[in-house]
Image (tube, rainbow, N blue to C red):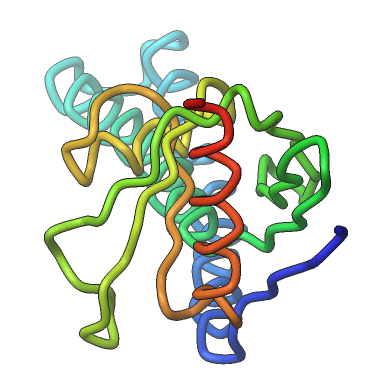
Length: 172
């Protein structure tokens, strides 16, 4: 039963832009953070301005890491197997994470449409990544990780049918 569901060409453009932003912003904000720490440690900075720069660079580093990686993880390739789902996630590189069928909590229709105005679903699971927890939190679906299934996933209707069948089998 191995089937793979890929992301669309337009979502690949979004992913590439987010990764470009990530790989440019992280070194720049890291440099700003380390330069501020160095200036504070050596006494070469005015204290109040350096503290503001330190706080700003810390937030900048957090946002430079979190938001692009969350955006990239909105668009996951998914492989369906008899044992569960293989989800391609980005954690500073692409890896495949396995989710067993008994770790799937629910498939939830989201109230907000996707970027094309079509319905989207959130597949809540027990374990995935930090960024998938952010996705669930962003869509107000709790703190369990969620895999976003929107119209950027090719043949998503077939995938949704398979997931619904498997989760109904689990409930019986």
